[in-house]
Image (cartoon, rainbow, N blue to C red; front, top):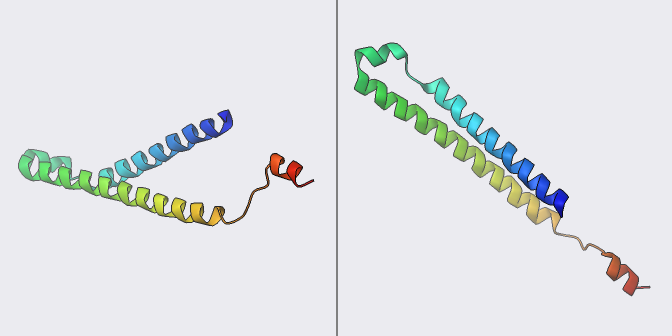
Length: 92
């Protein structure tokens, strides 16, 4: 349905925004000082790469935790039967 498709689009946009914000926040918190760039550019570049990798790792761990929670919810929601209108009319 249209409502289902709309909710999927909104949820995926929010999920992407959360993961990107998490990655950027962790990267910013682990960035080296800009003073190091003038003193030792190679060390600064290596620390920037390390900070970026920490951001990627944090966002992937968050995405994995979202996926685990989604799988658990999916298995718990499908435990009961759903009566559709055609089944209710057939039972009358």
